[in-house]
Length: 218
Image (cartoon, rainbow, N blue to C red; front, side, top):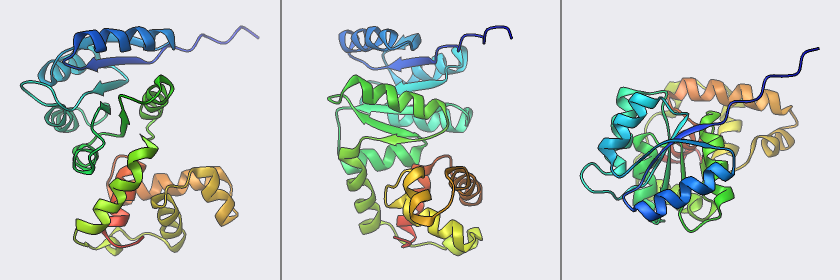
């Protein structure tokens, strides 16, 4: 058999208004085998870079001059729904996290965390999954539970098993933990989650968890 073709490195756009931090992060990511195709200083430049370079993931700061990271995330979600955005911020405020997720970000990690967490967030985003820093995930769901009005989750026509999977997902369980709890295979869990995302019309498991908490399921 011929040798397997080498895996292409993940391609990212970095958006941060602090040039020293931005370039330092770029060097660290390159050291982890991630290709930084563009490095920009504001949200508008991030949108242009994403449209021109078609990266796997845009790593976005929230607070930048001109168009903020939040505005840029909304714009990319509207113009390029397939674009994955990972927020990398100093802010662990619940408002910022919630707004970023609802704007379309599929992950949120903190700048003071380890580089491995940033890399994990990028890889999760590129694979269509989500990663939120454990330090802020609980606060996100607590805020949604406390403030958001309920809507009608029943209109999504989830099966009883999908409700079970969604409830455990919203409690923060990984796929293998859900599989163990429900005594089913991880591939079956994956299939249920894919169906849930389609029925709820959301992009990722974080948004599904927010919807479940908002609607009073957990």
